[in-house]
Length: 188
Length: 389
Image (cartoon, rainbow over all chains, first blue to last red):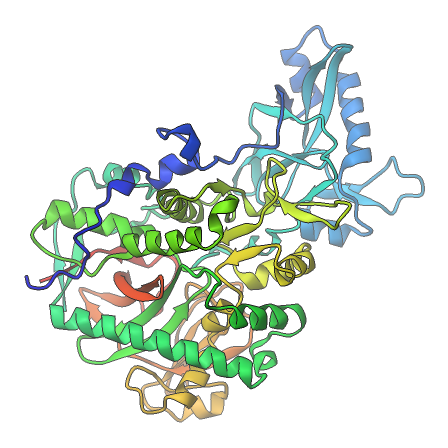
């Protein structure tokens, strides 16, 4: 071996900050942590149900039908809306969109509700709609609330998600990321 | 250069996972991080690769400058916002942060030729910078490796920190969930923290747009403004998507900086291979390249058709004496294509090897070897460590 091709002065101490720890936020002084993918600010976590039946089975004392209807109504009022099925599917994925039946006259398309969160409020249970995009991002209203485990086109929903009561503060999301769908490689 | 078989470390999976390399095995169970062999180069060979990489980077800068100066961006597929962004970033290139790029080189121990440059979204970075270095320390602690990628990456980020990068978080984005891209971004985030920056992750679809009284702006998952964004996501895609126009507006107005800068689109566009050949016809680092298939059909040894925006070998095909002998499907077939003379790759034990040679902080500083069982290096090509003997 002759001349070193590598600088000998700088070591790999940096790797105590490995990629894994930076993104998951572990084992680092709090002030220097890179932030893990945490959903939008939320005070409360709530159970997520994919169906009224699942809600009933786990909550015998609660009117799950009413909760579902409340979530549906909220969904119709807060989910992003599109003028056509095709435009909606381009953003949210094939088979992920439907007509907004609450909209008089029809003609408005929006991502389908995948489930609902059962949060608590002073007045009793409060339901919140959840819908997902083509790469598994989960949203409630206009807020990103978490990530589904997407395998073979099926959404594995997490058991709990943070409830986001804020109307999104006028923040729109989901305007990036659609090109990656269906392509194996992003970087190269 | 030679390929040497060797036993993998018995606990190699755990070892590379501890470094953040979780994508060591493909979804269908094939090895991606492959330490059952290594490539041994002599110092002369490595110095040749290093010098060639530095020379190629200079040539690429000259070529990008010529394309912009001569108003040729439309021929590369850029007009409107994308052309304006490229021109602006080029005019400011001395101040715009640029971290990295990876030249893919064909080298069989004799001829050394440029295959292409990925200057916008290169991956296999953690593998090259970190995983193979730790492999070397355990397997051959007395040997050397062409690799100061890690230090140069921190240097580049520290330079950004010193030039206005410290005032606000450096947001970092990629597709999510995606172990390889998230892991690569996570590694760069670790380097950013080491360089004194505040790195904040946001998945690309989680980036928000907030309307405000004085115009809107992009925000992260906690609704904090994004003013500097490292993206492992192609510029062309960002601009093509729903928020594309807003992105262009923010960057053109100087309210948002992206890493890599927009001119890297041109550097990564395979149409540049034709410009390079026109500008430097005598360079022995360049293969013949053309936009005309007829011309390519006249070359001996065959040619490779590549979509100008293609990545990881997608939609590439190899033609020999008029017959397609290898091709890869993919999602880039709507692109313009270029035709490049076929190069001779290193071959051993039934493998075809391509060298990924890194430019970080504007310096040639390391390499990685990718191996395939066929002549097209694709996204499942295995990463094999190297050493200098």
